[in-house]
Length: 454
Picture: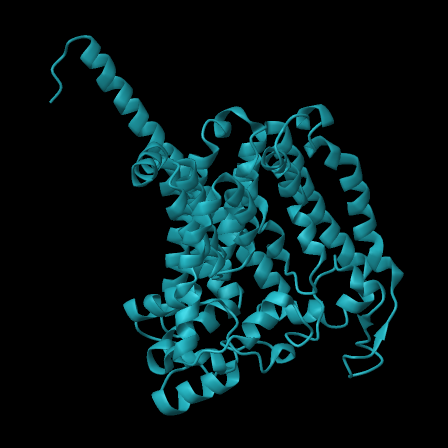
């Protein structure tokens, strides 16, 4: 795997340089425009790990920020390192491997608070991981990047998503995807045990890569032992006093995690939309039938397209039960995005969680259909906000917009600055690449003429 990564880095080194330059430009601009609350919280809990150990899972944000400020002199009690009020009282809810990453990162670069460089250091590490993800994707996509239009569309979309998560969001997704993609590269190289172990680490950073497990399990059931072995990363902290109530509550998307419903795809809004106008009591609900519009459109789309992923009866004739299950893998993968309709808490970037699963499709036509479905779900997410506008404008949207402290004109100006800076970087990068290619061509021609090159 390391050889494959090294070769891919060498082959795409020119493009990786451009990607890194764009990423470095984006970090300080995004740090000014966006309150990266997840990054800030992980920074705080990473620092606190070296003081409290795994017992920080038993402490909520405000309690921890106060203790670190009062007793240890950290600058975390500023309202930027804790969850919003509607999530008040939630204890640390990210799995253990993500905590370990940020604990090591803060140990490598001491300092805390928005006035230090530590937050941007965390963004920088995530940017490096994101660019490694691009390398891993080139390995998994292979020749499809050159020969299949869908692969290039997907790669471009992932670049925007990954850059946003790393440079502008400071979120765990780049780490999760990195471990997932490493697992798939290892699986491609028939290193099934290592692949399952790495998948287990990915699941213990965020849960969503678990959807890949059934596919890998069918490929080699015995290798799943290594995934179970990786769970020691999460089991051991229990013996040191860690409790995971908030983590479980977050994974199950229960109302105890948040009284807000932020998923406009969730059909439950049709019968229990919280009354954010008429009552301060979140248990007061009302019916809102338009909330079913996204689900109805999605079901219609799936009924028309799922047949393309199901094997013909003739194909199943004479096959064993195991072979029949394997033949259903494309249909299983195609159904994965439907999970996004099940939970109350689905933020916009969650829509791309399952996009990397596209590399598991063996046929181009299946990958194209999957990419269309991901696009449709994104459009339905926007339609769901419009269909549930009275509810979202009453609470969830204003709460989300609080993450952008600058005025609308300043935010738009920052985005324009980022675009202009990116264009300038691309212009100079292109000039340098063309200069080097022209020089290389002159040298080759001189060698062909038998000239001595000094």
